[in-house]
Image 1 (tube, rainbow, N blue to C red):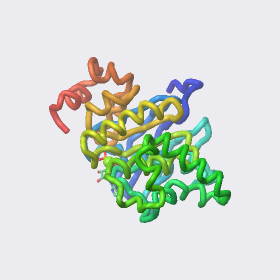
Image 2 (cartoon, helix red, strand yellow):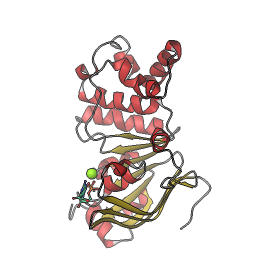
Image 3 (cartoon, helix red, strand yellow):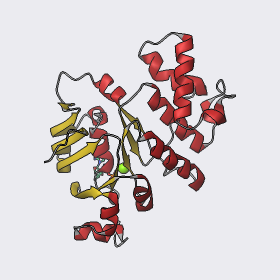
Image 4 (cartoon, rainbow, N blue to C red):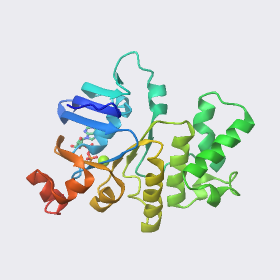
Length: 255
Ligand code: ADP
Ligand code: MG
């Protein structure tokens, strides 16, 4: 597999098991810095499982088992010496359903910094504002920082979760269907945000919407039944896929 010097992360020979069930078969996939990669494929094909391998969220599932390598800046994240908390700081995650804590807007964003021992009030305020600006939410919440995050709209809550992820200065951002619970306008805001964020981060997004994959991603990877069938530049994947299964899926013949 060609691993270019710009590869921020890569999976090599990745196998994943839930007990006896093999959910991922021999995945090789490279993620370039400052690119958005979309993971697509029918429900149950292993997109979320694969995404969770990238910051070891699957460690929390006791029956699960991983073989192969996932590297971040060339180092295997499954090496026993790896500090998983630090890994998850570097590889942040945003989930399908917005999941703010039942705390104020401010405390949601400050959370990760506090967990990392930051106490300086001025620094916290600075980081919270910066993160909310990066998440394109500042103007909407700057007068509501002490209100409960649960009072925000769904789209605002999702951008708050993005701000919370950004506050700890990640390098890679994993997003699992981040807009699937949102209305079209909130979805558009998230997509615009992804365009801006990729200047600074490496982004890997799971989406069931092919239109969304086509709009937001540079590279698309098509999964089917736990296997990576085809990957390539998004415009080529959606116009001239090499593989028949990819073509059938993107033209809506199954899925
Ligand atoms: P996708 O995100 O593409 O819809 P998933 O990664 O969620 O697919 O699931 C891939 C396969 O792994 C499915 O067959 C699913 O039933 C199975 N699976 C997912 N999570 C678990 C789990 N916690 N325990 C056992 N099997 C699981
Ligand atoms: Mg999923």
